[in-house]
Length: 192
Image (cartoon, rainbow, N blue to C red; front, side, top):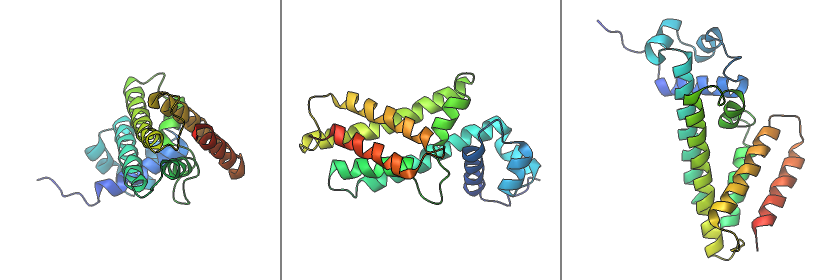
């Protein structure tokens, strides 16, 4: 007879996601995961199969959590510039609850070159972020806030590539003021 799970899958997945986000894939051991997630090793294997599958599900959870938050929050801003500032600050500075940097960016640097599944998930996550930024750019161009001399896809790619660099810098000891200054310059560079 099968036993009922004694834990909420999303809750333990959030814990695994955070640990992978903080430490990376290679540095995170199964013992770390069992301890941090607060479940038995057998439950981890029964639910998630293995570390790699758990990691892929953690990436999906990250994407679901971050993009869900961003999609909801940007609707609150009347101007495209304010929405873009929110996205940049959220993804670079974050809040006290979020580890620095970005799980996708960290993972791309660590694993994408040698893991096809991770590469595909990373690229899909990047595409979603770029799509979100493109929609903000289109709104900004339509409202006369952003330069219309560039195609929305080109501006979205430019903003996103800078955002990726900022997310890497956020993992270092670079002062937040420097990150803020770069974000302000980025916003200024796309505004009319």
